[in-house]
Length: 166
Image (cartoon, rainbow, N blue to C red):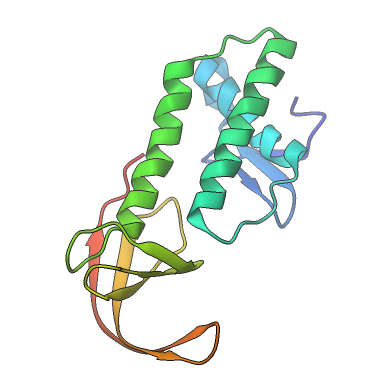
């Protein structure tokens, strides 16, 4: 699998869509979870998962990659650990929930663009960081100016943080 794809040893399993390179943790390949992680990243490459705009799209890509991982695992005779897959998908669910939960009232909100959310209940708007491997950081936006179909951010109030699970 490593020879057939552009794979490099590293500190984490990941797929860089810009360079179409897969990074893997060499010592983890001795375990079934490590092999599944490598297959999962190869699945992203194989499926052409190069970008997304909204968190829910990322969740869809993750489900698709795990479905492809299951197929490849069967092809290579590798045991599929459904509990591990469920834990991985749950970590994305929790990440999305943290990003989309209003920092003022705690209600679930709508994503406006790749890093901005807006609450229906209290009319709060906030920006979030983009990294999936870091804690979720939110900056409340204190004023929004409507300029047609898109909104322009005018200012910020404060930052609140919550740890990333998974």
